Amino acid sequence: MIAQEPLPWPQKHDLFGVGVSATNYREATELIVEAGSRRQAAVVTLHAAHALVCASNDPGLREKVNEFEIVATDGQPVRWALNLLYRAGLKDRVYGPELMLRICEEAANHGVSIYLYGSSPEVIDDLSASLVQRYPDIRIAGAESPPFRALTEDETEAMCRRINESGAGIVFIGLGAPKQDHFGYDHRHRIKAVQVCVGAAFDFHAGVKKVAPDWMQRRGLEWLFRLSQEPKRLWRRYLVTNSQFVAKFLWQASKQTIRRRKTT
Image 1 (cartoon, rainbow, N blue to C red):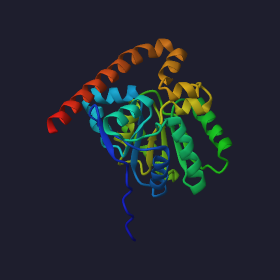
Image 2 (image 1 turned 30 degrees about the vertical axis):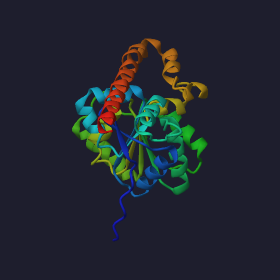
Image 3 (image 1 turned 180 degrees about the horizontal axis):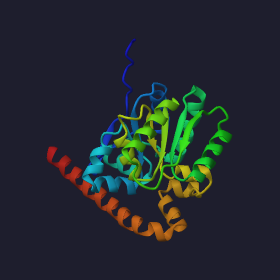
Image 4 (image 1 turned 120 degrees about the vertical axis):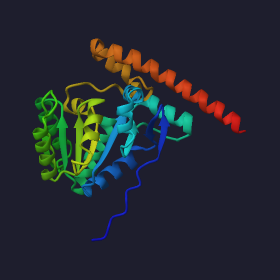
């Protein structure tokens, strides 16, 4: 058997101690589907400002995330930071819900089956129906909603076995950040597929939550739209993490400016 060439995962750049991938929809989709066709174990996550700040502040989580194959720019501010600090030239972010649809379309075209893991049973059912309606040729090898507690070792073993025996090449994880990032890392050697952490994409595509208007998304204001939908749950998150994101960006930008001046 001839060994396959390793996949060229995108280059990462340091943002607040987290390696963020300079990638786009097309590259990420092609790599994920190709890895899925090989049944290659890999982990992909998508970080907006909140998730990036959480990983930056938590050494254990940061260490895990830095081992992922792709950490994409889910939020516009993360993309802007990558462009400003590293001249990455990214013309758009890689938004989790949009990436999920592109992966599903490409997977359907290439006969790569998918698995859905996360959220509630009702959301999982509605999501499965929505994806089949959008992509009639899609192969959903399995779909399940885990209990709202930590799995026992026996349950974990059974879950990994179900996924692996399903033949799925791509597993979408919808557990929310940072839980889904911990899940992806903890099972990266046990699940023989690409795990793609897409968070709220499950709720959006199931029709449970509304997606921010395009004009708000383009201007990096999706957080404001989501805050207006769930103010009690999200106000503290965005007040703290958005402020920290700005402070961390300014600090890193100033350090890089000082460093460049010293070398010139």
